[in-house]
Length: 329
Image (cartoon, rainbow, N blue to C red):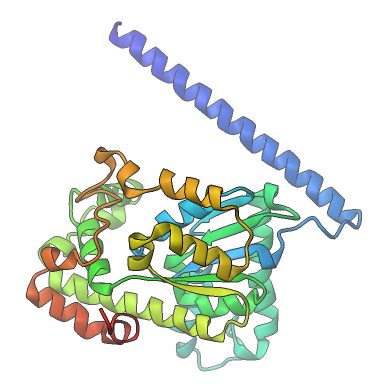
C-alpha cells in the first residue's frame, strides 16, 4: 500500500473513532436531560446516592489505579479517575487559609463552612451525575482521588454518608516508584511533557538532584497520608484501611475484606474475575517494568532501587508513617 493510501486509512480510522465518541457523548447528554426532566417533575431518585460514593484516598504511587480498575470493573460500578476536587478545596483551605488575616472575606472561612461544604457536596454529586448518568438512582461511583487527598477531611465532612478506602504503601517503595516515574525518558514523564511541555520539558530535578527531589516527594507523601488518616479517624461511616503490601500478597482475600467492611454486596465470582483480569501476571510485558506506568509490583523493591543516602532521607521524612503502619515489618 502506498504512503498516501496509508494516510487515507489513518484519517478514516480517526474519523470513525471521533464519530463513535460523538455518538456516546450525545447519548450521555440525552440520558442526563431525561434525568433532569424527571427531577424537575418531582422524582427524587434521580441523582447519585451519596452513600454509594466510594472514595479511594491516600497518595500517588500506592496502587490506587490498580485497585480502582478492579473495583470499576465490577457490576454496577463506575470509576471516576481523579476529579481533583480534594486538591482544589484542600490546597486552598490548608495551604492558603493561614495567609488570610480577615476570615470574613475568605471564601472557605470556617464561620461559613456549612455553605461551602454544601457547594463541595453538590460539585461531587452533580458533577458525577453529569459524567456518569448511568449511576443515577443506583450503583456505586468509585472515585480515585489520591492526588486530592490533601482535602480528604473536607471531602468526608461534605459527604459523611459516603464510603472510604484508605490505601497506604511503604513510603520507601513510593519514593522509588516516584523517582523512576519522573526521570527523563520514562513513559509517565514523557506523557506529562507531551501534555504540558512548558511545565515539564525542562524538569530534570529527579535526574540531576535526586536526593532533593525525594525529600520534597517524601514531605508531600507524609502530608497526603496524614490528611487521609485525619479523615479516616473522624469518619463515622463505612471505611476500610488497606495496605498495598496486603493487597499484593492476597488480592482476592483483601478485595473480599474491602467489600465486606464497606458492606457493599458483590458476588465472589465477580471478585475472582476482576482480580484475575487485573493481575500483574496478565499485564503485557511491554506495559510494565522500569520507566512504565506499571513499574514494579514487588514490595520491598526499594532496597534495590534507592541508595543508602536516599533511604535515610525518606525514612527521616516519613518516620511517622513507618512507625504507624510498618513497625512490625
